[in-house]
Image (spheres, rainbow, N blue to C red):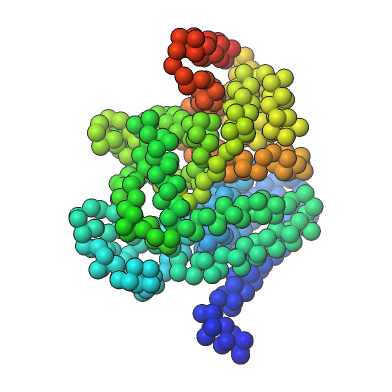
Length: 472
């Protein structure tokens, strides 16, 4: 009691709350483990009862994880969002439940927001804006978003960081790493702790909203050639490390098919533009948005032409910068995958320090590279056979997958997150377009010389025609 009282006076109960989050996480993990062990005791796959009981356990466990993530907030929300993105391997019950983390996160009292404004700007929101709505319109893993109107009459979105986030970040990170190590002791092949270790610095950058604003401006510049992409402008006089103010955008989440249909927009066009935009980042600019989940990608009608669509990219806190050599080898590797050139795949995989090119290709594509069907071409949608194969690989060859992830360049981890997230979006749309081929065309375009002369024009034209011919 004395220790808790001192912590309350000196630290605002920071250590007590950290202990609560640790205890909650440990208890949820233990509860889920015991539930699976007890409920499946004596049951075997294929006996009928097993297939009935397993989805019930999945749903119970997913609800426990959701409650834990919402209670803990911060990094726990990001982990839950990451799990929801792996919708071709993780059971449906987990995906459907944890997807709520795209919009349902921690919410705080208005007094906390007002106090933070006074600390950072010396004035409450009502003095800085013509109007400020204290009811949050969205809640992310690190902040809440509010709607406001500036003194000049501009509609804006104000992203306000949770006041205690910076204090609790290191403690939560240590807790997650400890729990990862604990899981590794029980399951020798299941160790993701090294990923968290590698990403510590990048995750910390998300705490700085000035850094996020600069990322947004660079993204807008990199993708300026695409009229179908829009990045909200930053209002720098109302932005600092914990508060970010941008123009307000009306639109719907990229996963909201009903709203997209109501705007008379085609999801196949949406997906094609989605892959093209992020393909440009991955293969051409090397500056990659690492968290493009549906809550961060909006769709709207182009204000200049309502018959066209625009993708609005939000939340630019988490980015990865690819080394030019890594980016070039990745371009050539992806082109080789689509052309089924195994010799080239092996060569460029080795250039990326990955000896197992087949596993590497399947991790990038999230689909088998051994083709089936007419002509051995990629099918637009994954078949039940493909899904079963990928689930089996994840279950039976996890050590090989982890070995491949560890061997590849570290800055590809967040690129994989991007690829897996946009693949998840397309899967929910029914996979209407050929994702690998669209990305391969982006990779090929990035490899073509940018100089404008007759020789380069002929060379670029030859490469593109060769690619399309071989693909055909």
